[in-house]
Image (cartoon, rainbow, N blue to C red; front, side, top):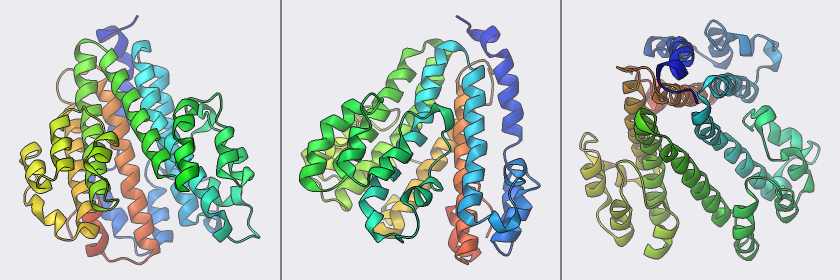
Length: 360
């Protein structure tokens, strides 16, 4: 089994070249200066995203279509990394990639619940497919067939034989009883992260160290945001909060989650875990606007871990993992830019939301 220098020589060189192609803060400034969506897309055509946008005519490049094409670049990055990664690390990368399939599954089920509100002249699948991540041949869910059932229970039946069958079966009764997808989505999230964490911990040596650090920082962010949102917005009980979160992580420990669930001051817990996140109490003065800012701050913590992976020893799984996460964050920034231009937001309204910091 390939490992060490021999296992990473080729992929390290390839990923570093791909890393160099990521947009810089200066690129983001240039893109953000575009006055409208059309100008922004024109500017994107001179970046590494250009080849994904070039095949479409200007009148076809709606914001939604442009976002879909941009996601194709991220999908290609995952495919390239999976193919070149040392064999023992591929299950981890494939499981990381399933995050986007999980998002597709949620989007499909939500679309079935809301289909009655759509324009009846537009086929349901035509409305849904443009918002799905282009998972391609790697997908294990029959998305179109599920949408076309028009019924959540029937759609769930189509997941038999997929990696989601067990989790879906476990939560299906609550979905039916509560007429809500919330318990199902929580179950899917928890199972995804359990599997991802398990794959990271199966590795050994430097691979395990870096995978736990990078995957763990992302897991921490999600676990912390779950317990906070479930407590503030869903008013879940202490027992429910514990059951709906994970008892492990990198910096966020089980006792931290339990403290928040039990009613400890959330800002104090955050400050203890992340001393460099200042004035944490401000996020909770108005949770509606403050929690997105907290999530933004936590994403920056993940980005720091990812960027640090490129310093020093290049022969470990940390570099491919870090590149894939940074690529995802870049796509998130581009989606913010496209949507902000579409809705005519000012620089002051959207620039603080970007992860690649640019001046106002």
